Length: 429
Ligand SMILES: NC(=O)c1ccc[n+]([C@@H]2O[C@H](COP(=O)([O-])OP(=O)(O)OC[C@H]3O[C@@H](n4cnc5c(N)ncnc54)[C@H](O)[C@@H]3O)[C@@H](O)[C@H]2O)c1
Image (cartoon, rainbow, N blue to C red; front, side, top):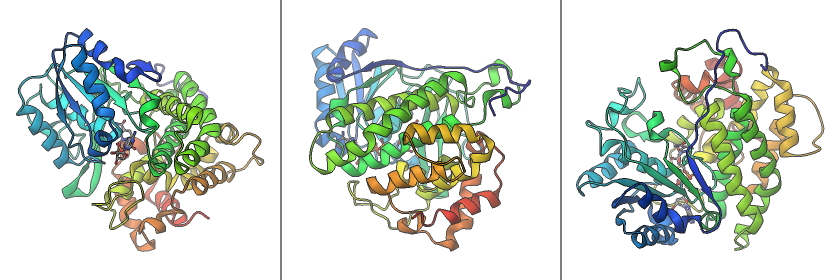
């Protein structure tokens, strides 16, 4: 996998401007005013609003002379309908010079859809990835977005995608375009310090899988050569994305269990919480360029077809499998499957996550991941979130729709392979 194929010879790397550290959220007004903005739409969700973080950022904007209109209706795990509602709100509120997102991936993705659609004609489905949507590119500049994450997980503050559930099709998909990348990412560990333990656990598994999947993604040189206009932001594993992924895994090994434990005990997590924020940022900068593969492809139908699972620490009004949990549920078996495509990378990842772990076969990395999942309270497989052997075919069918992700896996993946992974993921321990 590490030998470049003669075909593609170029990889790309892009990232937003970044501000990191305690107190950074109170500087957002300075930066947004510096763009020349006088009126901003702040997008958040009810949980983040209640934690007081939206007000911290709104106060900073106002103190720099930026008028703020707040939309606090971002849905946790956005849908096409919830994004359209946010866009309709924004279109009804006059013109804005900037959008500011305060929240986890849900609020940030909602803000991305708004930033795109307040300056561009048409509806959401015009821009959603084909074949579900029409995959149009924006014709007008997208409003500049400052993204202030309050979870330690998605890396959405660095990426070019906006993820949503398309309700009628029971499928998750997204809009993917370089213009969606935030202009500024402001990561303030004081904000993520108030996450409940269940959110740290699920969102943290998203960090872990971003790092692992981008580290084991098909090497950029093994893709067919592209013309510059054909290049997409995700180009496969490459020397620069590798650095971010490796570093993120090292941070998670020390901080992940400690951060969840601290939240369970009502502590703010101190150094561990700060390391989780840094790890999320690092992994986002890696996967935002390399891409992710099988666990993320599987996560889409796992989240999309949920029946009645209601996880602790998330809003209880609707059934959901939170994104990071959905990604984690097939990760051990996915990495057992990909092991032979790049044994040295899987073993190196296992050592970074669990220094000194013994063994050199395909079961080492799955063992490290499952042990972490057990310790931080992630369900013991698909059965615990309500799926049985009879659901495997439908889950496989949903995952097969994510061809862009599956093509990033380090080896070819068939429906039969996915069925084996799903079946073995019904119960992990
Ligand atoms: N765009 C991308 O690159 C990308 C990448 C991965 C995932 N996603 C998407 O992001 C979404 C998941 O985002 P997430 O995992 O960050 O969680 P989230 O935004 O869905 O938030 C989860 C819950 O935690 C609460 N919360 C968030 N921060 C808090 C804080 N500091 N204190 C107290 N409560 C807090 C929220 O109110 C919510 O109830 C999914 O829709 C997923 O598909 C997007």
